[in-house]
Length: 397
Image (cartoon, rainbow, N blue to C red; front, top):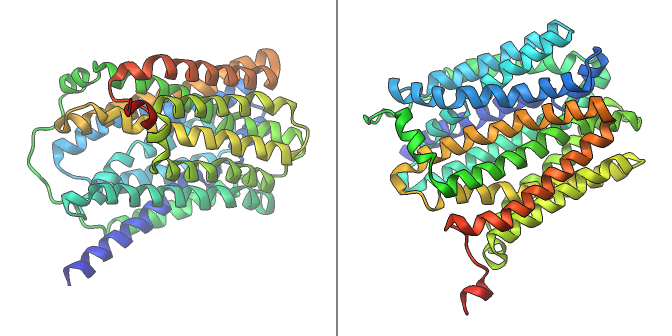
């Protein structure tokens, strides 16, 4: 009977999580091109796309501390969905660049509540099953995003630019109502995280290195997939529906690469070599974009780049806590997540500024350069973290 009850809460959480990420990503395939259609410059596109990461960076840690202090998780799940509702309505009802910037910032605030989602879901499992809980949570995360991005462009093509935003608002409202039925986590009395503890963990050399590399990874992702690649695709003649297909080719390899990272090939090759290779793949894919002349070629570049970035990120996430004591791992992960959001903001803004000066070609080449720098830094700095697994062939010497 207990298993049935627990299964009920897990299934309901899964549905709410899929809805949450659907509402945040349904309009993502068309967002950059919509900004340009409203008269926004490439720099404004960068600000709109980057505001999502900037707000997450500012709010993620305070929301986590607040949640710990009051001992509640469910209220933040509902808050995240209500913020997603407000975000979508703002962008859907007010077709101007300022409203889009405000709305996308609100979506960043909504995404900042994701930590509470994962903590609540893990409370539905025995403590020894925490890795399984996180795996399922990330599956629901990816599923919601993939469903949304595969539909958003086609919905815009059939019903107009504002339709995906309004659909996101409707779905978010339904998710907020469903979230009220979730079971609150059992409150475990413990001392809330102090800022001083966070700063102390943030001084760990290995954590700083992998967090810095994660910033570069997110710079590349948000400057291309969620930033300027859709604009280039439109210049090649892509319809809104084809923009959805472009985003699908940019996200599916990430999921496959993340899955492969859990296999033994990372151990066999060595983590710094895997991260180096992933950065170089991403760099090549970004640099080639301005020289593609068909959508088919562009799809291939996006799949290759996403495969590279998809290999890098899980490895960096694992390294962020690998050498940190068990009692400080949650704090380390919170620091890591807050810091990498800087790349979600900085990448699009930087490439947008470069794009206004030298065109999209300059922006994509700059993104490629970021990847090359990231690869070089990985080879140079990762061995110094002390948490890198050497290739098996070397470890046997």
